[in-house]
Image 1 (cartoon, rainbow, N blue to C red):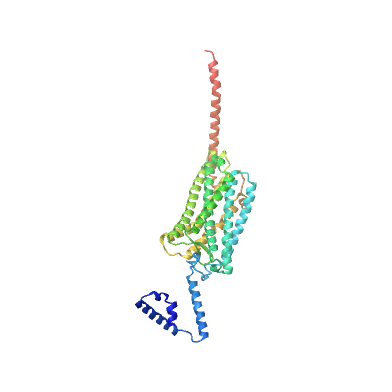
Image 2: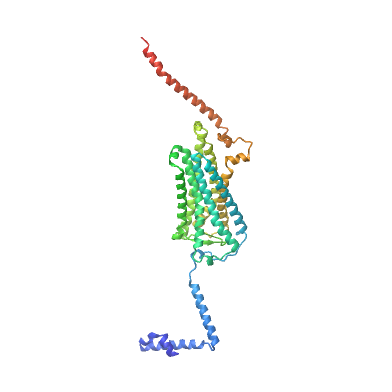
Length: 426
């Protein structure tokens, strides 16, 4: 035994000096004595010891493997709390949203094919892009959440490399930012269309609208790819049915959280400011003398729909965006209950958006209240809030037009009078 340890455990002892060699031999003797004391007495005990050693080696190797990044913060399995995670809620919410958006897409397509107004066709393209984005967002994220609630699949086994979790996190960011950015783009289009109609007629075509929608999708997609490049990270979230970016005070996670929050809040702010200016301009034009030059009924209808879209987006998204920014800036612990609550508010935006166009159309209002006069040539019958000031201003504008005609007739008669006075003999 001593010779074995001298050769195998201390191969360098042959090159050592006398004192070091003696110390090495004493150490080998002690180790040999310890190993001899634990040597199995029988073949069965030796086999058991070997299997136990292999088991320990396997466990040590398994424990040495690093946990995937998406499971490093919240590692499943979770305790399924039905108060915050319900399969029925997810199913009903997704089914209602998908059916509403699908119905709105059909109505928008039929209206777009029959419309002759270039202004309205551009707005319908924007609205169609918004409804299509909401539909795809509910389809992608809702199917994953419902599948988890039905099967309770194990995320680490299904997705050991975090590809599936990253895909869902990207989908949450992409389909979350797209409605806000599209709302801002629609506000810009309406502001230009109302305040500068001639510039809009030459610059904003249907092709330009499609390019703008594609640019919005590209911008949102680029932001959703940032965590894959190391700027932030996607993690599995409680109760284990969805993935989202990590909301923490770590430098990279904090930066991406602020990018997401500020991008959404900035889009809402742009929509609010431009829609406010558009409403003021539209009221001045509709209630002024220029109302006889252009028909404004469709523009008022589109502005009402756009304002409702903005209000719904603000109510649904502001709590979540403010909550994310407040959590990362204060460095406080993430409140899962509030996160899920505000997330459901944000998801409600995708369900309510299509109903804005479905309900607030002239044809639908005519069916709801058939006794009212919904003639297409008058915006006063559609929006009676303008009925008090519009007739007076219209009468004044007509009187001003008559005065201009009389002044023009008077000026046209003066050259003939002057020629007669010159030809008269003195």
